[in-house]
Every structure is written in structure tokens, then in C-alpha cells.
Length: 254
Image (cartoon, rainbow, N blue to C red; front, side, top):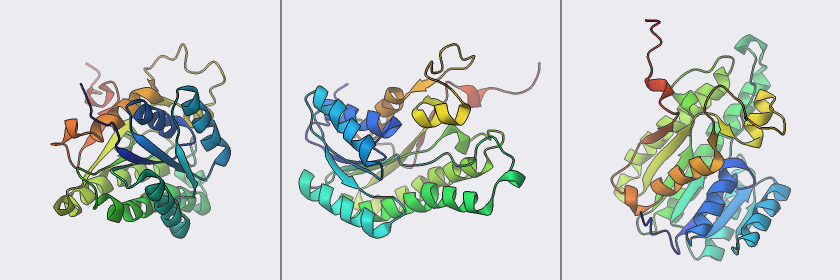
């Protein structure tokens, strides 16, 4: 399938690692012009090095997604470098407190997770909207999680934050429909990224031998590219659930 992403101008938050990095490299390989935003300068440098090894150049800008002014400046800089913006992919997020019951999570930890994962997403959307409104066939894709649909134990704050992302996308799809901006999410199960390895205490050996299926960041990036392309032009307000069908299974013991 030709996704016709050549010369598409794309900004990706969280492009310093994991799904954001994989998405940046995948878009560049398709001929898109890509800019990445992150607060992690070292990680962005590494993403650019990997792109250069494949013959691509990426634009970069530094910003924390919770800083509205820094975010606005970063997007403006990248939009100028790219000559406009056709697609925005919001990947920046944290897992927050994992492996602890809500009673053992501090108020500050709750607020920090919601601030980055939810308020940050609102700020990215608000910053992206006027830029996307000038484009032809614009798209906005956010990274959700299967945790928005099923509850992982001892991850109440993360679960709630990703559920907010999924419904935020549905709300924006309705609000932005008159401007022609499609809004969707990709909601993966466990992805082999540095963040998930840290959360689960996985070492350098990765998820080899795990008794459950694990996605790669490249798997998720392919979903992001599809939803950012005109091949998915009829898809709006949707969450692409990538969980190997686990949520479709009955828990009934028969």
C-alpha cells in the first residue's frame, strides 16, 4: 500500500525514544519531512544520528509538553523549518507510579502523571490545531494504550490518564471535523521500549522468553503512519487497539 507520505510535514512529540523515535524514522523512510520535540536533548540527538545513518535529516526543538510557551515556540520553529505542518503525532508520556496500589501513591505523583499525560496532551493539541488547520488533509494522532480499555493492576493513575487520551481524541475529532482535521489514537499493549523495560524490571535481554506477546516500537509506528495517511481518510475519532486480541477474550473459566 502506498501511504503517499512523501513530502508530508510531520511533528512528533517524544521523538527522543521508543515509539516517538520509531515513528520519526518510519516517516522519514517514507519520504516525509520530520521534526521532533522532546525535553531530552541527548535522546533527540541519538534519534537524529540513527536517521543520518539511514540518509535522513530531522529537525529538532526542545520543549516540555507541560510548558505551554516552550511548546508553542518549539512548534513554531519546526513549522518554519518544515514549511508547514500536515500531521502531528503526540507520543510524549510517562508511566507514572507502577506496581503500587493507589493508597501507596502520593498526591504529587498523581498530579505529575496527569499533568504530563493529560494536560500535556491538551497543550499539544491546542498548539497543533491552528497549524494543522492550514494544511490539506491534516491529521493528529496520539498514543493511547490498551490500559485505556482494560485495567492493569496497580496502575490506576496511568490507566486513567490513557483513558483520557482516547476520549480526548474522540472529542477533538468532533470539534475539529469542520476544519477537516482527523484525530485518532493508537492504543498498544506492552511495547518493548526503555520505559516499559524500566517499569517491569526487564534487563538488557529484553522480553525474550516472555509468556505474552510483545509489540515492537516499529509495530506501533506502522499504525501511526496508517492513521496519518490518506489511506485511512474515513477513520476519525477511532482508537486502533493493538493488543493481539487479548481484550476480546472472555474471562469466563469454561
